[in-house]
Length: 305
Ligand code: 0GY
Image (cartoon, rainbow, N blue to C red; front, side, top):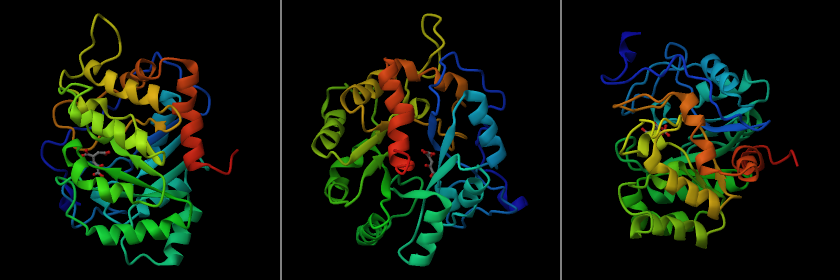
């Protein structure tokens, strides 16, 4: 469909990711990834800010197996708007190995929420990144949060670090577990103990319902993907930020690949290399178990005690 030619500058994801050296613990969950299209079956939203290349459920599940993950959490991306059909289709074909985070509007019915729940949705995503979405009134989001609380779901929030002060009151009033995408997108060129990241630490310290994905070194890095001292891992400048969160909030952190890495313009990460980032931020077997297995399962498969 010519209408869906991808946005210029879009990089294709890495079709031959390396095998990670780090062996993931049994039952590990890739807790942040996406499926896109295929656009002739699941069209992209007319309101989207970018058009990705298709990234199918079969390709996602092949990556899962290649890297050594057991399960996926598929997160609804803005290019599909509030049309969750591609997500539902992927979960339905995952043999129970995928659950999801949806986007819903205020007009969603209880029956639609029931359908999403039965399909494996356990959260909704509120996106505040201005380049990705138009503004949704906060009272509308709060109404959605109150309704999904009834289902035991959580709210995933995506925002830039500079916007946290303005969003603070809204975030701290959410009645559910709140999961922050990509550590609240810190500027890692600023000091880790400076006011910006300290505010995020305070957000987590003072609000035990707040969790963080310690994800996306490839988006946050300033130094880039180059290996240092011949080591296989990369994105060194992001490590202290992610490690600090894992060390301080080990029961409230999760990790994911973010495949197929929408909107990366300068480089496309090798997902195998991304997995090799993990032992540098979760430095013991116990922390790795929590980050990759115990925590995501508590959040997404709470019935498996
Ligand atoms: C991510 C990050 C991005 C995109 C989206 O929903 C989205 O379109 O989240 C981004 O561009 O930073 O988590 O996939």
